[in-house]
Amino acid sequence: MAKPAILTVDDDPAVLQSIARDLRKQYGKNHQVVPAGSGAEALEILHQLVLRESPIALIVSDQRMPNMVGTTFLGQARSVVPTAKLVLLTAYADTDVAIKSINDLGLHHYLLKPWDPPEDRLYPVLDDLLTGWRRAHPDSDGGVRVVGHRWSDRSHEIKTFLARNHIPYVWLDVDQNEEARTLREAANATAATELPLVLLPDRDPLRAPSMRELATALDLHTTADKPLYDLCIVGAGPAGLAGAVYGASEGLQTVIIEGSAPGGQAGQSARIENYLGFEHGLSGADLAERAFRQAKRFKAEMVLAREVVGLEARGPVRAVRFDDGTEIEARTILIASGVSYQRLEAPGLGEFVNQGVYYGANATDAPATEGQEVYVVGGANSAGQAVLNLARCAKKVVLLVRSSALEKGMSQYLVDDIRAKEN
Ligand SMILES: Cc1cc2nc3c(=O)[nH]c(=O)nc-3n(C[C@H](O)[C@H](O)[C@H](O)COP(=O)(O)OP(=O)(O)OC[C@H]3O[C@@H](n4cnc5c(N)ncnc54)[C@H](O)[C@@H]3O)c2cc1C
Figure 1: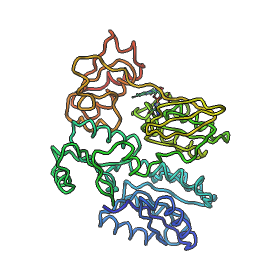
Figure 2: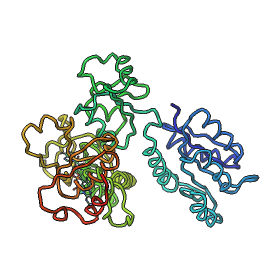
Figure 3: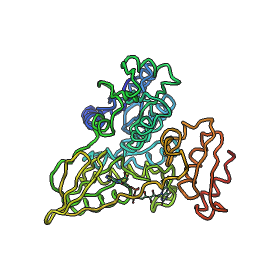
Figure 4: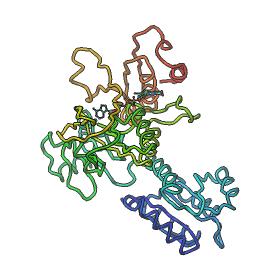
Protein backbone atom coordinates (compact mmCIF):
# COMPACT_ATOMS: atom_id res chain seq x y z
CA MET A 1 0.00 0.00 0.00
CA ALA A 2 1.23 3.55 -0.79
CA LYS A 3 2.45 5.76 2.03
CA PRO A 4 -0.32 8.01 3.40
CA ALA A 5 -0.30 11.36 1.61
CA ILE A 6 0.13 14.87 2.97
CA LEU A 7 -1.27 17.35 0.46
CA THR A 8 -0.11 20.96 0.70
CA VAL A 9 -1.70 23.79 -1.29
CA ASP A 10 -0.42 27.34 -1.90
CA ASP A 11 -0.61 29.63 -4.93
CA ASP A 12 2.79 31.23 -4.18
CA PRO A 13 5.44 28.90 -5.70
CA ALA A 14 8.17 29.98 -3.24
CA VAL A 15 5.93 29.36 -0.21
CA LEU A 16 4.72 26.05 -1.66
CA GLN A 17 8.29 24.89 -2.19
CA SER A 18 9.26 25.92 1.31
CA ILE A 19 6.35 24.21 3.12
CA ALA A 20 6.77 21.05 1.00
CA ARG A 21 10.47 20.99 1.91
CA ASP A 22 9.74 21.30 5.65
CA LEU A 23 7.03 18.62 5.47
CA ARG A 24 9.32 16.21 3.59
CA LYS A 25 12.12 16.79 6.08
CA GLN A 26 9.95 15.74 9.03
CA TYR A 27 7.44 13.33 7.50
CA GLY A 28 8.96 12.19 4.18
CA LYS A 29 10.07 8.83 5.56
CA ASN A 30 6.52 7.65 6.23
CA HIS A 31 4.41 9.90 3.99
CA GLN A 32 4.30 11.07 0.40
CA VAL A 33 4.22 14.88 0.39
CA VAL A 34 2.22 16.18 -2.59
CA PRO A 35 2.29 19.93 -3.46
CA ALA A 36 -0.48 21.69 -5.44
CA GLY A 37 -0.56 25.30 -6.71
CA SER A 38 -4.34 25.88 -6.47
CA GLY A 39 -7.52 24.50 -4.93
CA ALA A 40 -8.66 23.13 -8.30
CA GLU A 41 -5.37 21.30 -8.87
CA ALA A 42 -5.46 19.94 -5.32
CA LEU A 43 -9.01 18.58 -5.78
CA GLU A 44 -7.91 16.87 -9.00
CA ILE A 45 -4.98 15.26 -7.15
CA LEU A 46 -7.27 14.17 -4.31
CA HIS A 47 -9.62 12.41 -6.74
CA GLN A 48 -6.67 10.60 -8.33
CA LEU A 49 -5.33 9.49 -4.94
CA VAL A 50 -8.77 8.21 -3.93
CA LEU A 51 -9.09 6.27 -7.22
CA ARG A 52 -5.70 4.66 -6.58
CA GLU A 53 -6.82 3.82 -3.02
CA SER A 54 -3.92 5.89 -1.66
CA PRO A 55 -4.68 6.97 1.91
CA ILE A 56 -4.72 10.74 2.57
CA ALA A 57 -3.76 11.68 6.12
CA LEU A 58 -3.44 15.46 6.12
CA ILE A 59 -4.26 18.52 3.99
CA VAL A 60 -2.49 21.83 4.69
CA SER A 61 -3.93 24.72 2.70
CA ASP A 62 -3.20 28.42 2.31
CA GLN A 63 -6.27 30.67 2.77
CA ARG A 64 -5.78 33.54 0.29
CA MET A 65 -5.67 31.97 -3.16
CA PRO A 66 -7.21 33.37 -6.38
CA ASN A 67 -10.29 31.53 -7.78
CA MET A 68 -10.79 29.35 -4.71
CA VAL A 69 -9.93 30.38 -1.14
CA GLY A 70 -8.57 27.83 1.31
CA THR A 71 -11.78 27.39 3.33
CA THR A 72 -13.81 26.69 0.16
CA PHE A 73 -11.22 24.18 -1.01
CA LEU A 74 -11.05 22.43 2.38
CA GLY A 75 -14.85 22.21 2.50
CA GLN A 76 -14.85 20.39 -0.86
CA ALA A 77 -11.82 18.29 0.07
CA ARG A 78 -13.63 17.13 3.19
CA SER A 79 -16.42 15.56 1.17
CA VAL A 80 -13.83 13.70 -0.98
CA VAL A 81 -11.75 12.45 2.00
CA PRO A 82 -13.83 12.80 5.18
CA THR A 83 -11.14 11.21 7.39
CA ALA A 84 -8.20 13.47 6.42
CA LYS A 85 -7.01 16.02 8.97
CA LEU A 86 -7.51 19.59 7.72
CA VAL A 87 -5.21 22.51 8.51
CA LEU A 88 -5.43 26.11 7.31
CA LEU A 89 -2.18 28.03 7.00
CA THR A 90 -3.14 31.69 7.31
CA ALA A 91 -1.76 35.18 7.69
CA TYR A 92 -2.54 36.87 11.00
CA ALA A 93 -5.29 38.96 9.35
CA ASP A 94 -7.28 35.81 8.54
CA THR A 95 -7.47 34.31 12.03
CA ASP A 96 -11.19 35.18 12.38
CA VAL A 97 -11.96 33.18 9.23
CA ALA A 98 -9.88 30.30 10.56
CA ILE A 99 -11.57 30.25 13.97
CA LYS A 100 -15.01 30.31 12.33
CA SER A 101 -13.99 27.40 10.07
CA ILE A 102 -13.18 25.21 13.07
CA ASN A 103 -16.92 25.08 13.78
CA ASP A 104 -18.40 25.52 10.31
CA LEU A 105 -16.04 23.23 8.42
CA GLY A 106 -14.68 20.83 10.99
CA LEU A 107 -11.21 22.33 10.45
CA HIS A 108 -8.78 20.55 12.80
CA HIS A 109 -6.31 23.39 13.28
CA TYR A 110 -5.04 26.65 11.86
CA LEU A 111 -1.41 27.75 11.80
CA LEU A 112 0.04 31.18 11.25
CA LYS A 113 2.55 32.16 8.59
CA PRO A 114 5.50 32.34 8.86
CA TRP A 115 5.90 28.94 10.53
CA ASP A 116 9.65 29.29 11.29
CA PRO A 117 11.09 27.55 13.20
CA PRO A 118 8.97 24.54 12.12
CA GLU A 119 10.15 22.58 15.20
CA ASP A 120 8.12 25.02 17.34
CA ARG A 121 5.42 26.37 15.06
CA LEU A 122 4.55 23.58 12.64
CA TYR A 123 5.64 20.07 13.66
CA PRO A 124 4.09 19.88 17.18
CA VAL A 125 0.56 20.47 15.84
CA LEU A 126 1.02 18.27 12.78
CA ASP A 127 2.61 15.49 14.89
CA ASP A 128 -0.53 15.45 17.06
CA LEU A 129 -2.86 15.35 14.06
CA LEU A 130 -0.91 12.63 12.25
CA THR A 131 -0.72 10.53 15.41
CA GLY A 132 -4.51 10.80 15.77
CA TRP A 133 -4.97 9.86 12.12
CA ARG A 134 -2.63 6.85 12.41
CA ARG A 135 -4.46 5.58 15.49
CA ALA A 136 -7.70 5.63 13.54
CA HIS A 137 -6.04 3.90 10.54
CA PRO A 138 -3.66 1.33 12.05
CA ASP A 139 -3.26 -0.67 8.83
CA SER A 140 -2.77 2.34 6.56
CA ASP A 141 0.97 2.40 5.96
CA GLY A 142 1.50 -1.27 5.20
CA GLY A 143 4.24 -1.04 7.80
CA VAL A 144 4.58 -3.68 10.48
CA ARG A 145 2.87 -7.08 10.25
CA VAL A 146 2.95 -9.60 13.07
CA VAL A 147 2.26 -13.23 12.13
CA GLY A 148 1.71 -15.68 14.98
CA HIS A 149 -0.62 -17.73 17.16
CA ARG A 150 -3.26 -15.88 19.13
CA TRP A 151 -2.56 -17.72 22.39
CA SER A 152 1.22 -17.34 22.21
CA ASP A 153 2.82 -15.30 25.00
CA ARG A 154 5.54 -14.04 22.63
CA SER A 155 2.92 -12.76 20.18
CA HIS A 156 1.18 -10.97 23.04
CA GLU A 157 4.42 -9.37 24.27
CA ILE A 158 5.33 -8.14 20.80
CA LYS A 159 1.86 -6.75 20.10
CA THR A 160 1.85 -5.00 23.50
CA PHE A 161 5.30 -3.54 22.87
CA LEU A 162 4.23 -2.17 19.47
CA ALA A 163 0.95 -0.78 20.79
CA ARG A 164 2.57 0.90 23.77
CA ASN A 165 5.21 2.48 21.54
CA HIS A 166 2.44 3.75 19.21
CA ILE A 167 3.69 1.72 16.27
CA PRO A 168 0.74 0.74 14.06
CA TYR A 169 0.77 -2.93 13.05
CA VAL A 170 -1.43 -5.51 11.43
CA TRP A 171 -1.99 -8.73 13.38
CA LEU A 172 -2.30 -11.92 11.32
CA ASP A 173 -3.34 -15.07 13.18
CA VAL A 174 -1.91 -18.25 11.57
CA ASP A 175 -4.81 -20.30 12.96
CA GLN A 176 -7.47 -18.17 11.32
CA ASN A 177 -6.01 -16.18 8.48
CA GLU A 178 -5.06 -17.46 5.02
CA GLU A 179 -2.70 -14.53 4.38
CA ALA A 180 -0.88 -15.34 7.64
CA ARG A 181 -0.30 -18.93 6.50
CA THR A 182 0.92 -17.75 3.09
CA LEU A 183 3.38 -15.32 4.69
CA ARG A 184 4.63 -18.00 7.07
CA GLU A 185 5.26 -20.32 4.12
CA ALA A 186 6.96 -17.56 2.11
CA ALA A 187 9.28 -16.87 5.06
CA ASN A 188 9.86 -20.63 5.40
CA ALA A 189 9.14 -20.34 9.12
CA THR A 190 8.18 -23.96 9.63
CA ALA A 191 9.38 -24.32 13.24
CA ALA A 192 7.03 -23.11 15.98
CA THR A 193 10.02 -21.40 17.64
CA GLU A 194 10.30 -19.04 14.64
CA LEU A 195 6.92 -17.49 15.46
CA PRO A 196 5.86 -14.80 15.79
CA LEU A 197 7.29 -13.40 12.59
CA VAL A 198 7.58 -9.63 12.44
CA LEU A 199 7.58 -8.31 8.87
CA LEU A 200 8.92 -4.82 8.17
CA PRO A 201 9.20 -3.14 4.76
CA ASP A 202 12.55 -3.75 3.00
CA ARG A 203 13.91 -6.09 5.68
CA ASP A 204 14.32 -9.80 6.20
CA PRO A 205 11.60 -11.23 8.47
CA LEU A 206 12.38 -11.08 12.19
CA ARG A 207 11.82 -14.52 13.73
CA ALA A 208 10.56 -14.47 17.33
CA PRO A 209 12.66 -11.33 17.96
CA SER A 210 13.65 -10.10 21.41
CA MET A 211 12.31 -6.68 22.38
CA ARG A 212 15.72 -5.16 21.75
CA GLU A 213 16.04 -6.75 18.29
CA LEU A 214 12.59 -5.47 17.45
CA ALA A 215 13.27 -1.99 18.84
CA THR A 216 16.53 -1.75 16.89
CA ALA A 217 14.86 -2.90 13.67
CA LEU A 218 12.23 -0.20 14.18
CA ASP A 219 14.95 2.46 14.57
CA LEU A 220 13.97 3.17 18.17
CA HIS A 221 16.76 4.73 20.22
CA THR A 222 18.15 1.82 22.27
CA THR A 223 21.68 2.96 23.17
CA ALA A 224 22.70 6.03 25.20
CA ASP A 225 24.71 8.57 23.17
CA LYS A 226 27.09 9.71 25.91
CA PRO A 227 29.15 7.98 28.62
CA LEU A 228 28.26 10.56 31.33
CA TYR A 229 25.06 12.53 32.14
CA ASP A 230 24.03 15.00 34.84
CA LEU A 231 20.80 13.09 35.44
CA CYS A 232 19.82 9.51 34.63
CA ILE A 233 16.16 8.58 35.19
CA VAL A 234 15.17 4.92 35.40
CA GLY A 235 11.62 4.44 34.11
CA ALA A 236 9.53 6.54 31.70
CA GLY A 237 6.18 6.42 33.48
CA PRO A 238 4.51 9.73 34.38
CA ALA A 239 6.99 10.28 37.24
CA GLY A 240 10.08 9.63 35.12
CA LEU A 241 8.80 11.74 32.22
CA ALA A 242 7.98 14.62 34.56
CA GLY A 243 11.49 14.33 36.03
CA ALA A 244 12.95 14.44 32.51
CA VAL A 245 10.96 17.57 31.60
CA TYR A 246 12.04 19.43 34.74
CA GLY A 247 15.65 18.20 34.67
CA ALA A 248 16.21 18.93 31.00
CA SER A 249 14.39 22.27 31.16
CA GLU A 250 16.88 23.34 33.85
CA GLY A 251 19.70 22.57 31.44
CA LEU A 252 20.78 19.24 32.96
CA GLN A 253 22.06 16.66 30.48
CA THR A 254 19.30 14.15 31.03
CA VAL A 255 18.84 10.57 29.89
CA ILE A 256 15.79 8.45 30.63
CA ILE A 257 16.04 4.66 30.44
CA GLU A 258 12.85 2.70 29.84
CA GLY A 259 12.61 -1.09 29.78
CA SER A 260 9.48 -1.16 27.67
CA ALA A 261 7.60 1.91 26.41
CA PRO A 262 7.03 5.49 27.57
CA GLY A 263 3.96 5.99 29.75
CA GLY A 264 4.37 3.16 32.25
CA GLN A 265 1.10 2.04 33.81
CA ALA A 266 -0.61 5.24 32.70
CA GLY A 267 0.08 4.26 29.07
CA GLN A 268 -2.40 1.41 29.50
CA SER A 269 -5.23 3.62 30.66
CA ALA A 270 -8.10 4.03 28.20
CA ARG A 271 -9.16 7.32 29.81
CA ILE A 272 -7.58 9.43 32.54
CA GLU A 273 -10.14 11.85 33.91
CA ASN A 274 -8.26 13.34 36.86
CA TYR A 275 -5.11 14.80 35.26
CA LEU A 276 -4.73 18.50 35.97
CA GLY A 277 -5.32 20.72 32.96
CA PHE A 278 -7.28 18.21 30.83
CA GLU A 279 -10.85 18.93 31.79
CA HIS A 280 -12.32 16.41 29.32
CA GLY A 281 -9.79 13.70 30.22
CA LEU A 282 -7.35 12.07 27.82
CA SER A 283 -6.14 8.57 27.06
CA GLY A 284 -3.01 7.29 28.79
CA ALA A 285 -1.39 6.84 25.37
CA ASP A 286 -2.06 10.48 24.57
CA LEU A 287 -0.68 11.66 27.92
CA ALA A 288 2.45 9.53 27.49
CA GLU A 289 3.07 10.77 23.99
CA ARG A 290 2.66 14.42 24.93
CA ALA A 291 5.01 14.05 27.91
CA PHE A 292 7.52 12.12 25.77
CA ARG A 293 7.56 14.87 23.13
CA GLN A 294 7.77 17.60 25.77
CA ALA A 295 10.82 15.96 27.36
CA LYS A 296 12.44 15.53 23.94
CA ARG A 297 11.85 19.18 23.11
CA PHE A 298 13.97 20.05 26.13
CA LYS A 299 16.61 17.70 24.67
CA ALA A 300 16.20 14.88 27.19
CA GLU A 301 17.48 11.66 25.61
CA MET A 302 15.16 8.63 25.66
CA VAL A 303 16.61 5.14 25.59
CA LEU A 304 13.94 2.48 25.03
CA ALA A 305 13.77 -1.29 25.45
CA ARG A 306 16.69 -1.27 27.93
CA GLU A 307 16.44 -2.68 31.43
CA VAL A 308 18.58 -1.20 34.24
CA VAL A 309 19.89 -4.14 36.28
CA GLY A 310 22.44 -2.54 38.62
CA LEU A 311 23.75 0.69 40.15
CA GLU A 312 27.17 1.30 41.64
CA ALA A 313 28.70 4.24 43.55
CA ARG A 314 31.91 5.38 41.84
CA GLY A 315 33.35 8.44 43.60
CA PRO A 316 31.32 11.52 42.61
CA VAL A 317 29.28 9.61 39.99
CA ARG A 318 27.05 6.54 39.86
CA ALA A 319 27.37 3.79 37.28
CA VAL A 320 24.14 2.50 35.71
CA ARG A 321 24.38 -1.06 34.37
CA PHE A 322 22.19 -2.45 31.59
CA ASP A 323 20.96 -5.97 30.95
CA ASP A 324 23.59 -6.56 28.23
CA GLY A 325 26.51 -5.70 30.55
CA THR A 326 27.12 -2.19 29.13
CA GLU A 327 26.90 0.88 31.36
CA ILE A 328 26.78 4.67 31.55
CA GLU A 329 27.54 7.08 34.39
CA ALA A 330 25.51 9.91 35.88
CA ARG A 331 25.98 12.50 38.62
CA THR A 332 22.43 11.98 39.87
CA ILE A 333 20.06 9.05 39.46
CA LEU A 334 16.30 9.26 39.80
CA ILE A 335 14.59 5.90 40.20
CA ALA A 336 11.02 6.11 38.89
CA SER A 337 10.46 2.41 38.26
CA GLY A 338 6.85 2.41 39.51
CA VAL A 339 5.17 -0.84 40.42
CA SER A 340 4.44 -4.14 38.72
CA TYR A 341 1.31 -6.25 39.04
CA GLN A 342 0.61 -8.25 42.17
CA ARG A 343 0.34 -11.87 41.00
CA LEU A 344 -2.84 -13.83 41.64
CA GLU A 345 -2.07 -16.98 43.57
CA ALA A 346 -4.45 -19.41 41.93
CA PRO A 347 -3.09 -22.92 41.27
CA GLY A 348 -2.26 -23.53 37.60
CA LEU A 349 -2.75 -19.91 36.57
CA GLY A 350 0.96 -19.24 36.01
CA GLU A 351 1.24 -21.41 32.91
CA PHE A 352 -1.48 -19.44 31.10
CA VAL A 353 -0.05 -15.96 31.71
CA ASN A 354 -0.04 -14.03 28.41
CA GLN A 355 -1.72 -17.03 26.79
CA GLY A 356 -5.31 -16.26 27.73
CA VAL A 357 -4.67 -14.87 31.23
CA TYR A 358 -3.35 -11.29 31.25
CA TYR A 359 -2.24 -8.79 33.85
CA GLY A 360 -3.70 -5.42 32.88
CA ALA A 361 -5.58 -4.64 29.70
CA ASN A 362 -4.25 -2.19 27.14
CA ALA A 363 -6.77 0.00 25.38
CA THR A 364 -5.78 -1.83 22.17
CA ASP A 365 -6.61 -5.28 23.62
CA ALA A 366 -10.38 -4.79 23.46
CA PRO A 367 -10.94 -5.75 19.78
CA ALA A 368 -9.40 -9.21 20.42
CA THR A 369 -12.31 -9.97 22.79
CA GLU A 370 -15.00 -9.28 20.17
CA GLY A 371 -18.04 -11.47 20.83
CA GLN A 372 -16.39 -13.27 23.78
CA GLU A 373 -16.96 -13.57 27.53
CA VAL A 374 -14.18 -12.00 29.64
CA TYR A 375 -13.55 -12.26 33.40
CA VAL A 376 -11.76 -9.40 35.18
CA VAL A 377 -10.35 -10.04 38.67
CA GLY A 378 -9.93 -6.95 40.87
CA GLY A 379 -11.96 -4.27 42.58
CA ALA A 380 -10.06 -1.01 42.14
CA ASN A 381 -9.69 1.58 39.38
CA SER A 382 -7.51 -0.43 36.99
CA ALA A 383 -10.09 -3.22 37.01
CA GLY A 384 -12.87 -0.67 36.52
CA GLN A 385 -11.13 0.90 33.52
CA ALA A 386 -10.44 -2.55 32.04
CA VAL A 387 -14.13 -3.49 32.35
CA LEU A 388 -15.26 -0.34 30.53
CA ASN A 389 -12.64 -0.77 27.86
CA LEU A 390 -13.37 -4.46 27.22
CA ALA A 391 -17.14 -3.95 27.33
CA ARG A 392 -16.84 -1.95 24.10
CA CYS A 393 -16.18 -5.21 22.23
CA ALA A 394 -16.76 -8.29 24.42
CA LYS A 395 -20.17 -10.00 24.50
CA LYS A 396 -20.12 -10.06 28.29
CA VAL A 397 -17.67 -8.85 30.95
CA VAL A 398 -17.84 -10.35 34.46
CA LEU A 399 -16.06 -8.49 37.28
CA LEU A 400 -14.95 -10.66 40.22
CA VAL A 401 -14.55 -8.54 43.36
CA ARG A 402 -13.47 -9.74 46.81
CA SER A 403 -15.13 -6.95 48.81
CA SER A 404 -18.85 -6.54 49.44
CA ALA A 405 -19.31 -3.35 47.39
CA LEU A 406 -17.63 -1.89 44.31
CA GLU A 407 -17.51 1.56 45.94
CA LYS A 408 -15.04 0.33 48.57
CA GLY A 409 -12.11 0.26 46.15
CA MET A 410 -13.21 2.07 43.01
CA SER A 411 -13.81 5.73 42.13
CA GLN A 412 -17.49 6.62 41.96
CA TYR A 413 -17.37 7.78 38.32
CA LEU A 414 -16.15 4.32 37.26
CA VAL A 415 -18.76 2.55 39.40
CA ASP A 416 -21.50 4.66 37.77
CA ASP A 417 -20.18 4.00 34.25
CA ILE A 418 -19.96 0.24 34.88
CA ARG A 419 -23.51 0.11 36.27
CA ALA A 420 -24.74 1.92 33.15
CA LYS A 421 -23.26 -0.78 30.85
CA GLU A 422 -25.66 -3.41 29.55
CA ASN A 423 -23.11 -6.20 29.06
C1 LIG B 1 -5.10 0.59 33.62
C2 LIG B 1 -4.66 1.71 34.54
C3 LIG B 1 -5.41 2.87 34.60
C4 LIG B 1 -5.03 3.92 35.44
N1 LIG B 1 -5.80 5.05 35.45
C5 LIG B 1 -5.47 6.09 36.26
C6 LIG B 1 -6.27 7.27 36.29
O1 LIG B 1 -7.27 7.39 35.58
N2 LIG B 1 -5.87 8.27 37.12
C7 LIG B 1 -4.75 8.16 37.92
O2 LIG B 1 -4.44 9.11 38.64
N3 LIG B 1 -3.97 7.06 37.90
C8 LIG B 1 -4.32 6.02 37.10
N4 LIG B 1 -3.55 4.88 37.10
C9 LIG B 1 -2.37 4.83 37.98
C10 LIG B 1 -1.19 5.57 37.33
O3 LIG B 1 -1.02 5.12 36.00
C11 LIG B 1 0.09 5.31 38.13
O4 LIG B 1 -0.08 5.85 39.42
C12 LIG B 1 1.30 5.97 37.47
O5 LIG B 1 1.50 5.44 36.17
C13 LIG B 1 2.56 5.77 38.30
O6 LIG B 1 3.61 6.42 37.61
P1 LIG B 1 5.15 6.05 37.81
O7 LIG B 1 5.91 6.83 36.80
O8 LIG B 1 5.49 6.21 39.24
O9 LIG B 1 5.29 4.47 37.54
P2 LIG B 1 4.87 3.54 36.32
O10 LIG B 1 3.74 4.12 35.57
O11 LIG B 1 4.71 2.18 36.89
O12 LIG B 1 6.14 3.57 35.35
C14 LIG B 1 7.36 2.95 35.70
C15 LIG B 1 8.16 2.70 34.43
O13 LIG B 1 9.46 2.26 34.79
C16 LIG B 1 9.88 1.23 33.90
N5 LIG B 1 10.87 0.42 34.59
C17 LIG B 1 10.71 -0.28 35.74
N6 LIG B 1 11.86 -0.88 36.09
C18 LIG B 1 12.77 -0.56 35.14
C19 LIG B 1 14.14 -0.90 34.94
N7 LIG B 1 14.80 -1.67 35.80
N8 LIG B 1 14.78 -0.42 33.84
C20 LIG B 1 14.12 0.38 32.95
N9 LIG B 1 12.82 0.72 33.10
C21 LIG B 1 12.16 0.26 34.17
C22 LIG B 1 8.59 0.47 33.60
O14 LIG B 1 8.69 -0.24 32.36
C23 LIG B 1 7.57 1.60 33.55
O15 LIG B 1 7.41 2.10 32.23
C24 LIG B 1 -3.88 3.81 36.26
C25 LIG B 1 -3.10 2.64 36.19
C26 LIG B 1 -3.48 1.60 35.34
C27 LIG B 1 -2.64 0.36 35.27
